[in-house]
Length: 560
Image 1 (cartoon, helix red, strand yellow):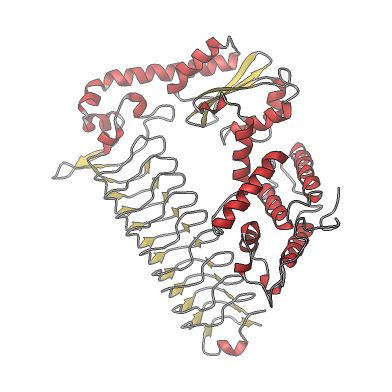
Image 2: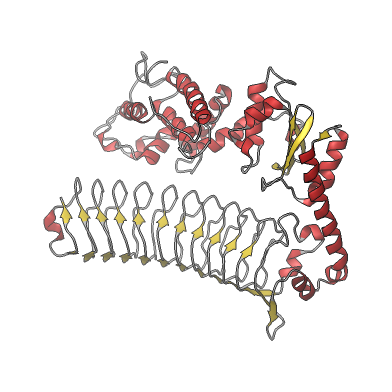
């Protein structure tokens, strides 16, 4: 294995360094280089040419990735991690077509999820897929330099695309992944395919894929591109049938699909698998009974009877609008839709939910008259598109992978607001978030009318550049590795404030920091209206001296 930087041309096609006068600026970088500068906060003030960036990336690779032990929960995990990582390292260290910045980005992506307490493995190396991913990303980043991206996610998607044949790409239907016995030549490729196609709760997503596929074929039922059912064989016998919950059961709505497939493929049911089928069959009988019990209520959309049947407590106001105590699917194995109930009609006259509302697996697309959810509101993976009249969520609000793009009239979220990996772009009328606010990996670049965050926000890996009208952060405020350069109307931070390696130069209207204030390695030049620091001020390698804090109340001390 070659060590980075020791080849005759360690920086690939960078034969002629970019010449600049003085230090380099961010505008001097493009594509992956710019992404690396942003992600890793490269000290560009020390760079005079692009070669300096490449040398810095080379040193970072040597220090953080060469000879690194990534651990793992079991001996087998540690062995496989080392083997897979070395494959990547051997390829990258011997590839002069990739810049060191590209290599750094790749190594960070494939190792970032490797924890001592888990069995997660790096993705397998496929050179063709890697080249495609790198080239496409480089081209996209040149046009959209600030685009948020997850390299590992893009690589895995491209790997899955390669693994699937044309018949698999129908996205709804069964995919058979052959065992070692039935396709020894492509066994490694099929192991990758099983990992990529497995639902995230299945153990075949990581560790057991190789073991199980060595023992027998694996069959996956996809619905609209998402895995719903996994059938594991040992030799020619079905040993296990799993649904999304990975609890030896699957949703009753897939029973006929599973039974027909088993019959068509002449598969043999093992005792345990037969027991699973019997349990789901009992659920199917229960569904048939509910359909009969509620036949008239479903036809007439008699919400009172449906709520009462499923023990959903309710009352009505003078206008005939409902106040219900909760909204969730009637069972983990079947939904309102499975029972033939139109959920949009069921909830169209509900104005308040006094506890939690869970919209995952729901067919609801809009909330119509709903104004208040006093508990948690979980929109993750839902198809709700419009919040309509909703003004208040008392608990957590989770928008991950939902279709919601605007919060419309929503004014307050009582606890945590999670916008990560969501489609929300517009905060609408939102002014208050009671606890944490997670903006990382979101599409939000404008805080709109937001004035208050009760605990600690996450701005890292977000597009937010200004806090605008935000006046108070109740917990810690971490600005390092964020794009925030303007504190806007911010007046108070309740706990610690971290400015190191941030873009902030002026504290402007900020008056109070309740905990530590970390100015070390920061760009802050103006303390603005700051008058109180509740603990310590750290100013090592900053633009300040101890005298700058003479008129500021610092409860503990200033560390020069």
